[in-house]
Image 1 (cartoon, one colour):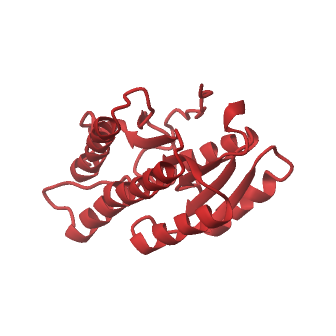
Image 2 (image 1 turned 180 degrees about the horizontal axis):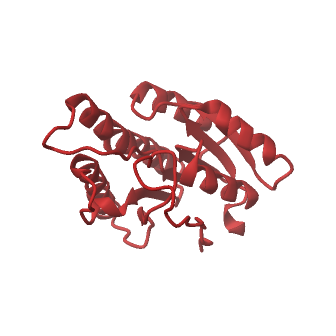
Length: 212
């Protein structure tokens, strides 16, 4: 990952789980990482443990369901850290969301978190990459529940993850660059967004392979 050293990456949902692991990995590899999260103090705690690494982690408070938060965060990154080379859309919400008795407000929250917020962040990153003629990476962290139904009543949650897949494929067409990484669907992990699975689940160590 030497070519990415000193470059700017934005990771949404960086306070825990996959986002935290990715942010840490990128910092250790020398990137300047903006970790976006509602719980800014958690990202600040991670940043403190990474002092002395090749890269640096900046904690930025942002609620991915609020466009004004996303725009403010991107403005700060661009003006203070530099042009964006990598965006990792990791922020997401997973929960029981059956169609037969689910709550409308919760469905809207799932859509705003998993789909609309991701789309806004993608748009802002793309526009900055265009302006700076950067051949960057945009990665959507999705879920297998968007590809295959599970035993859990997560119909609406799964539908939002299927939308992420569609957005990723649409982006491939828009950019006419199928070689670009645009989506990652993960298997079952133990993260704070998954609270209805048994704690006996196999823990999976997330690793980020080197980019070439």
